[in-house]
Image (cartoon, rainbow, N blue to C red; front, side):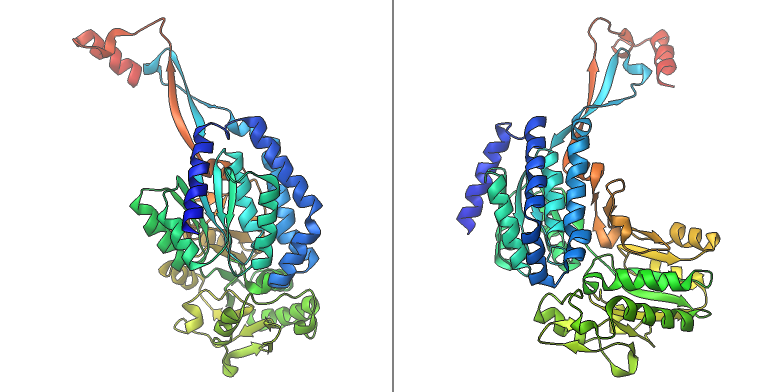
Length: 458
């Protein structure tokens, strides 16, 4: 495997150095091929996502396939504009000249994708890296094997190996890849592996984007539409069985509406997932036995407020609400990444924000409120990557805003124009005219030139 990876990487380096990726027409043509291929093979992708994670057809399209098509469509539409030099203002001291920034692809990119949204989080950064003019080695997760196989087939059917190549495997393959010198690394996954990627990249000064995770809080204040909040949280938390990096990880609920919120949330879970979610064909499954066992380790009968049933054969855990959770509880120290939701009472919003800011920075934050002062206080003074007011999860589903973490929850961002920028270096260039040459910057200096310099540069 090591020889194969080195051989492919050398081919990709040569392919890039021969300027095969710089043409607008070539980039656009490959994006169009990807778009059409995904449309034509939607059923195969859906089936793979079902086999790996039990995702329904609707969820697969809504949360993965449709978002990828939207991203590719956006890039196709705007690619020519994104590739153009960006004019900048030129200071008077540089008269006469024009200033601009020219996007340049990094070169050979390594993309490492996770298992929880295996199609979206592989193809989304891939299409952005290609739009920016890079070659790519794509490392898919060993846990989502069926989707990895579909992605491999897509790549082999569309691209030469010199442009895009897919690597399967786990720890060993990751180690081999990280031993190589890439021009850029884009990683989505856990903080633990992210630290390894960051440390390894630092040895060769390789720039990185790290899309990590964290415990994303959700705040319910006393001035909110409790029923609607419960409805939206029930959807966003248990989407993909909570195996979503921006899933609400725990809820701070104002004590004045706690009982009402819990009742509404229970009703919404039953309404959306049925009396027996374990038999609901549209309710997915945990990715593997190891993660299933990890999640069961959070269970304590004294803390279960609602739910708690599971099916080990099907790797399913029903939506479960926990009560009586304090800040020292194990579940408050780790990202849950499953269909378990602790609900904590609070009385002071100031204390809530203080708690959030005193712990590792979450990837997302959500607040449900009609009180603009409370909304502004939370969004202005809490540290987090991104989030929503009166909704959850949906902030990542747009090409018009960047998505990414902050501090411990990630480095860098992508989606839409920001995705193109992430995989591009902008060269700042001044194009100076030759028909005039102001003498004031040259020695010997004198008092007259000194006054002119002060005038031009003030």
